[in-house]
Image (cartoon, rainbow, N blue to C red; front, side):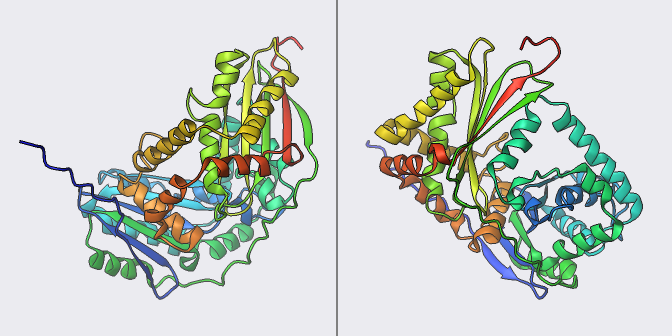
Length: 439
């Protein structure tokens, strides 16, 4: 007998958007596939909100938020979550600060209570400030000061590539600024940005929407709103000439090149073609730059980079660590020649389809171990929160993929021509300066 035709059911994330009385936006996505629920609180604050002399505050609060609140002692936040079978984390970027818990579904109210308690009554006192300042300093020593290429690639390149301070300074910030911060400065920052009307709460997974909304109002509803923060100007002047710099990295044993081009913000139509160009140039061993520099020319040990998507102007970057018997000019020529090949001849249908397949798989499977894909409650909650905060439209979770799949080869060629041009480029040559390295 002939096999029955297989019915294809389009994937769609259910959601509902609500705004409670204090202005906090709440996105709910009910799905009973597995008895797990994810809670995400996304605050509209990041490094972009820090003025000169006050850098590092957003990242500092990523740590401060675990130092206790009215009903939760220092360190107990972890205990409450982990002893009830959950996991948690937080992270800070230029655009946002986010916290999440993934819990057994019968512990949803606990996660909501914990998040609401610290939004309402975080213990922002001198002891916690002094303690967490030292924690941030130690993190900077570990991740930046004592890692080869970390400062050049993660801090200096941005300071060179951007002209606007709001975009240029690093998320980890200046240790001098943190040392100079008073308790009043930090308390004011918390009041301004960690307010319900400056946050999005997203819940996804196995729960009842009506019950969840009742709990949200119960625990968050009486937290008073604050005056909306002043908007931040993140505009960038157009780059009219190439910028170059050289830096000696005392921890590096090998030379490297970092390059960056300014590109439009995440809400721009060009981002879809840029995201696919990212995968064509950088993603996997079949990517153009890996094939050229690592495989054919055997000049590089590793190539990475791609599109950094921001609400303000972003960057398209590349970073190449290369062999000591090669020259900067050789590596730079190979990178620019491959880009010029795209600009002049475009990309092949096979390359474009491979990039679309990669993007589709990442969207559902996720990256970093699959934690953030749409197949997981956490991935859905985060995506809904991002689209609500950044784009004002959670419905994009179900429609945005199609925008990527509709990108043509001509559009990829066009964005390469418009943005990856020499007079829009910042080039940083990184010299190895580790002890014993021949200069």
